Image (cartoon, rainbow, N blue to C red; front, top):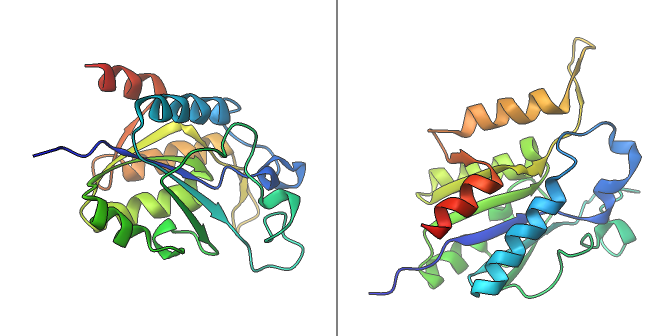
Length: 186
């Protein structure tokens, strides 16, 4: 019996997230970590799923056909599946991610991308609920500052840490890029 390799799920690493209008963000090394993981997966010829967000909002930097909808440098390339979505979860995109994973016999997902607390966390939660083994690579995700309804600003770093704490042990195993690479070499 062949054991399927973990699937690297790269979520929404698009040009539009480089625009300053998003505000301060966490983890300036996010994209470098993602490119490092992509390099490792592609070198080993393990499955890669690229996910892109096509916003339905008028004038969105992630609108279909806009320059912002394009992948950032070093992300596009060989992949086994390209999912396009307009909501937070990659499981509600086209083509159907869950169907493809089932057909491939894949049970372990490694999640990275943008943004930590929206599309990455939502996808990880759904994957966990669907019974997948999920590894969430926290330093290969990026969050942005958010405004609470009471008017205070919650820092991107606090948001990212809260996402990691909420996911770990319940929906996923939260690791760093370095920890994941070491575990894959053993």
